[in-house]
Length: 64
Image (tube, rainbow, N blue to C red; front, top):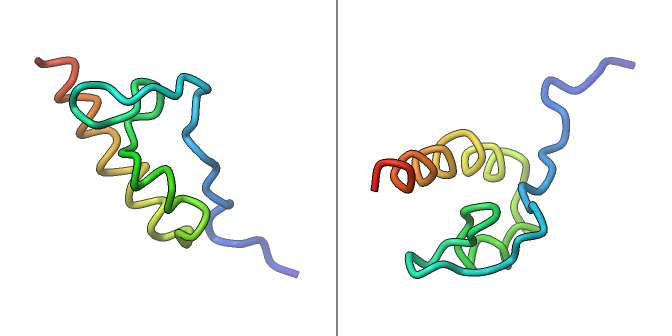
């Protein structure tokens, strides 16, 4: 049996579940819609969010 190419993508939830003024969670930087859809997302969609959208949002928050 071969190992999967990528391990399952775990939730970025940090337990700080408060939506900020920008509409993103203060803990994980996901939108309310992204949080609600997480369970239905496949690993490719989750990986895209984790590797691209969330780091971009974090960098915008630290610059602003």
